[in-house]
Length: 267
Image 1 (spheres, rainbow, N blue to C red):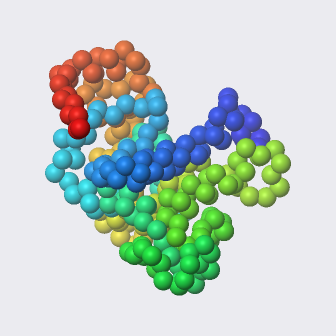
Image 2: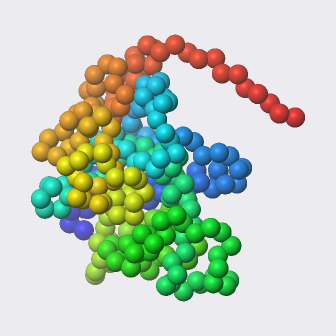
């Protein structure tokens, strides 16, 4: 509480913890309601962040979006020999592939857990392809998330309930427990619930929970590298910038030709 009280807007900071997952859940509800195909890539980032989508599309057009990957615009890495935990720096965004969205949206049934509201012992849907791994991680209950899961939930359902049920707004009344920033939540669930394939860096071959890639090697470890250094004052032509000046954004946008979009109506 003493640390939180130092924030200029403690309530706003606490509410922000829920936003990435509320937004992702809303997007999922939209795709499901209108039966739209999932996008090749889904980006979660702050409202004061800049992504050059022309560059992004060019860099991703030949990649396999069906493969589950989560890429951080700037990856924060804890000391390797102490914790070896990574998470995306929220302001620089996190890119979820279509494969990772499918992984997050697929319902899960753990055989050793009471089926609750699901009737019968056989679910009416196909179980999650990695239900054994997910159920094994649930049983460890590392972040006290186990109590929020019921059979038939997706991993996104679990995350959403986790960030919304914990009484983040009642910190003055806390006697036990802890608070997790939304970036840490994403790092935990993506890395430890295998929502992304293992990173390609062979240095981390013996770290099973190394799952989040950094965008073009952009990381914060001893110091920031790559896009992690692109904050406020950003170089021209960059793909990502956090908290850019509006005049810089307008200047960057003017360098790209406007596209004519044809709107098709169906009767």
